[in-house]
Length: 346
Image (tube, rainbow, N blue to C red; front, side, top):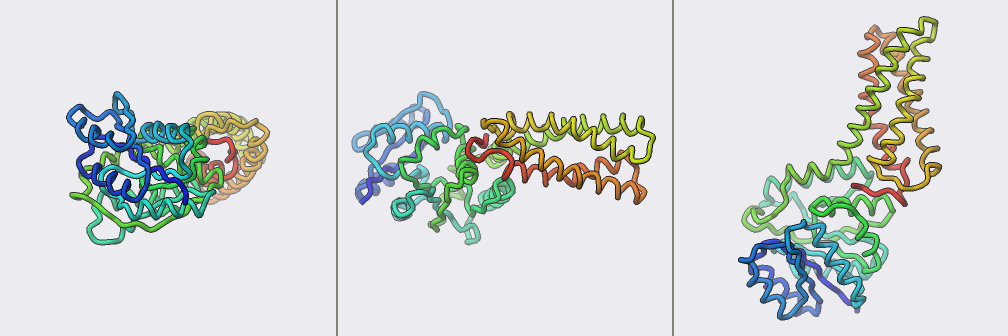
């Protein structure tokens, strides 16, 4: 039987955490709770827990991701467990589901096991249903992988994966989404296990802010948009200048190619360093990026030419063409161009 440690980050918990830990201990599971800077009025909860389990403490609230990293590092350094299960402190995960995920992780030693809820059942709060659908769509678009419950905090994995997971960026709720992105990029299987859908009081106790934390989740997309916008400004400015200078037949195509080469060089460097955080040698991604740039250039030029021939103004045609190829470029760069072995979603 694998040795299991249940890791629970806790911020302002109530007595449900005490009951959860007690039930887990009765099933012979080790427990580690991380007090993520809860105010002094919650000390009595942690004092009760400390009688039977390990309680780690952050002096200030650093976020769920930071608490998970603190707990994972502690378990890894002790070298007494085979499986870590991360669970929430707010009563949303049942003991039977926690144990079930741990058992699945024992049977899938190369995988991240994810406890997934059903959001189609009656009683699921609207904010949770909407948040899950939005994050599911975003994750699929960015990674190419389908995960039915990206926000689930019930996860199980072998302790051997801890060094990999400690290197993932993010100190708050975005950490868990980043963990899924890294698994998708590095081809770590994500094994889903159906669990009960439990919400207490319309999920008011959740510290997840849909708007604020969704913005963290889409940060990579925003950075790519800014990079693309800057490249677009360079491309369009050069195109407008060169198209006015090139009065010969085929001048539109020549202006488009010249502008694209300059903007592509800028875009590659910014995306490699700032958007996809690709730390591999340039040769690992440059060839793929160049092939993509040629593909998009050919398609871009063809569409631009067709729109102009159809009677659209030159600059308007250029803008519409760039919009059409934006999502194509992002998807291919994110999934295929930048190294899965060295990239990290931020």
